[in-house]
Amino acid sequence: MKPLLRAIAIVRIAFRYGLDEWLPASRITPLLRIVKVFVPTAAANRALPRGACLSMALQELGPLFVKLGQVLSTRRDLLPVDIADELASLRDQVQAFPSSQARALIEAGLQRPLADVFERFDDEPLASASIAQVHAAWLQGGREVVVKVLRPDIEAHIRADIALMRLLADGLYRLHPHADKIRPHDVVSELESTLLAECNLQREAANASLMRRLWQDSPDLSVPEVIWPLTGEKILVMQRVYGIPADAVAELDQRGIDRKALAAKAVRILYQQVFRDNYFHADAHAGNIWVDIDGARSGAFIAMDFGIVGQLSEQDQYYLAENFMAIFHKDYRKIARLHVQAGWMPASLRLDELEAAVRAVCEPYFTRPLSEFSIAEVVIKLLQTAQKYQLTVQPQLILLQKTLLNTEGLARTLDPHIDLWAVARPVLEAILRERYSAKAFAAKLQKQWPEIVHQASGLPALLQSALTQQVDGETRIRMRSDEIAQLVKISQRNQRQLFALAVAVTAGFAAGLLALLAGPGPILYAASALSLGGFVLAWPRKP
Image (cartoon, rainbow, N blue to C red; front, side):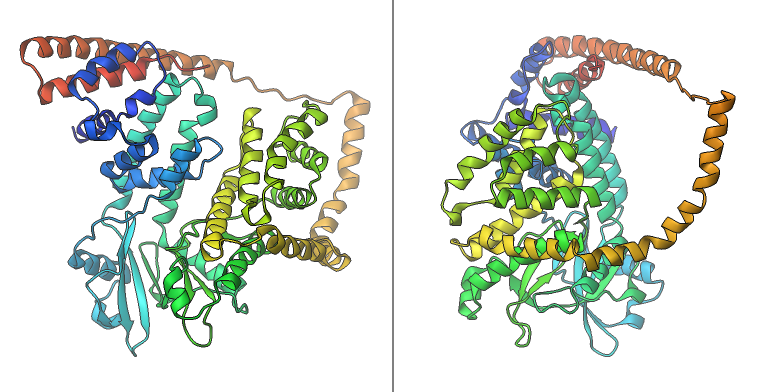
């Protein structure tokens, strides 16, 4: 019963904010108009921009739908700019759960009383989000730490809401004419993967530990130390640090911190993380990036919250770096060729046609003043060009474009006149010179030499076997057919659709009678929602 009530609540909120009007005209439109009579769009929402309506609806639906909005905000290759900008402003802040529960969960994770571990534990949380909340504490001996603990039963709540989101995605896939490009099931799967990964605090701790090791000798970035003996899947204990949010311009000025130097530092760190370390913070908004105010390290960045980090495949990293250098040199032909070689564009596409498309994307940006040039926007436009050819962009590239936007936004907040090109280009050039130097090649060859020798030792026998089979006519071709499994799958899907259609028609008939005889009420809303859901499930899938 709870899932049905939750589904009805989602439908009512969607209609109240006018989200139903976003659906294209289809055979289900008359049914939507009937439901609209009983759940009209609120007058106050009619004048609001569509992005604001979607943002407010997601906030009303709850923290997990806020997370969905945050994931969608990264898909600028799919969403209009106004909607993506509005969703990017969503903040994951929810009511804290009782400290008594937090204490019980922490003690269960540590398998001992808090008093045995902590000299003092602050019941008032420092922060509370949809996945976890954070408390300040002091270890025995006085060392300050923060304790991050998962919310009670969070995984069960996530799986329940994800199941409903899959139903919504299924309906959108059947109804929307451009569903193949939107790929709603992929978006929900990405959200599920992100949320469940954030539910494993030991994984987040490992991410933070690696980032700390990569930057331990740098004066530019620090990462709090993980207290491993006290950390597990449901509890994360880290060194407590003090700083100010990286976008707190007034406070930075008050403390005399050079904002221009800070902005350039933010850009350099990003390019070093992506192209030198191949390990970047993928949730780098101002809430997770602070500026150190300690005398010895004043002006250094502090990175926190490593629930989401990004890495690129070696191939994507290479082609992306080369694309950036081609952008810096305005070499449109090379950009087009690299897109084809990377598999981001179909090989059948004429290179001169693609070069013209790339020129149309890039040239308007090069006519701007350098202080207005955005590398992130160019990359996003190029990926959108790839989308027009119905090619799937890898999730890690989507994470990277979000990180580029966050970092460029932060840099421009700190220094509105920053020349991103002048800062990024020498960093990338130096990294590529070192990566493709003779010394780097020799080191890579030395590292891979045992594997090369091992593989080479089996080549003579493999070659002899292949030649023998050719001479004896014993070469075999293995083929596997999935036709029978596919037919079974189609048959089962048709049965489900027929059942859903029967439920939809019955519920619709009942809703009509109730509207005529009893008027508006909870039962009418439930019957209407059930009918609508049945028609959505019965709608034929695209082949």
